[in-house]
Length: 290
Image (cartoon, rainbow, N blue to C red; front, top):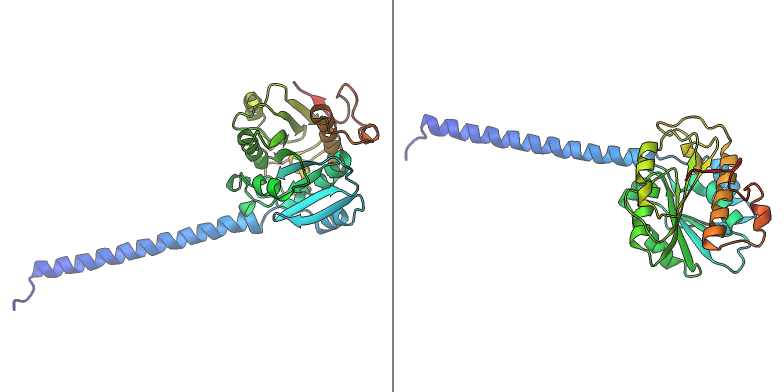
């Protein structure tokens, strides 16, 4: 038996050193991946924007609407819905929890006589749950007609859903958002706040070609980006010039008018409900920009 040579010893030491380095690198990469995943989850899930507790409870206590928790989020309908059944699936914006849209959903549900569903998105990112409306459509058999919509990132994902589900979807509603893919053969409404500093207006203008030719764009004077919901701390946002309650009231009026005009969904008391929307579609509620 021969003793190992000096070169053999050096090779053995070098191999062990390389293995140790490889193990340490692998451990470091794994730790960084775990930390990155936890940080991502904490930012988009644990630190998501929510409505204040008192605002949520005021909606639940409102006798004019019915609120239930389904699809990880909320289903809001008029307490006296009548015979016609139309639903709106509304995708939340990025890093915004469904409860932030409860007050707006209640206003729209009551004023337009529709069922509004605000489902939960995976880690509050609609881009990870673009097909979330499937479960809602399947789970609400009493609703015969559907509009899909959303706020900010949620609106872009609603566009994708509408574009690939033309047989299911009758209308598209965007609030502070734009489509990144073509949508055709639908009625479409895009609502912008004049104080929305988060929406990329150049991109919105460039991407209007993705909307159906007869789409409608309305502006709500004084409304900012976060007033599609009821939350604060929106990065890049600027102060609104109207209250959030007023913004929701005007948004609901615009949506109700559009549903009546383009989808023939008109509550019996639509004249009273839309008293602040003029026949020319101008004035304090919104201004058409097409």
